[in-house]
Length: 214
Image (cartoon, rainbow, N blue to C red; front, side, top):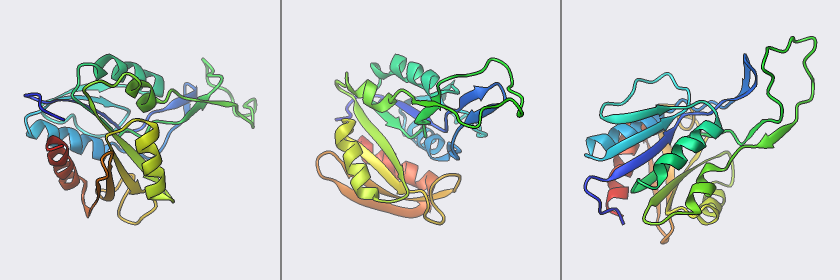
């Protein structure tokens, strides 16, 4: 239960980038809009907010401490350093699941580039930090294109989350880059609530209020 005053909140936002060489990388379409909206709403509610953000084109929200990162490994180390002190972790970042096995220090010329690239899994930030969860409330995000509720429920259990916010990324007017969203909120105690479609800023305000009462 969130009972600290003020609540200390750790939020991740945006994408990560996993580099093949200095000019080429693997990433995803996340713009960070939802995470930044959550950070702004949490700050407006009087919470102390640490925002760990991948590369985005958004202004820093007022009243938060911003920690810019690029790769999944960098995001993990920053979250790991801040997790023990937080009351609630909201993992809204779209972390790349894979990175190249080999990262070239110099640009690879296209004629010499391999046509097949070996990948390995990046660190599972959420699963790793929740292994030592104590007093923290943990919120995971599930961006899915199918089997939305089943996937979200699996994440809720497997990653020891208290809440999972799930959305369908292929639904028009929702998901990556959109200013609006429609979400399914699942709680570890059986909560099942739908919100939206509405603006991400409004959803962020609703979610922060919801988590504060949990």
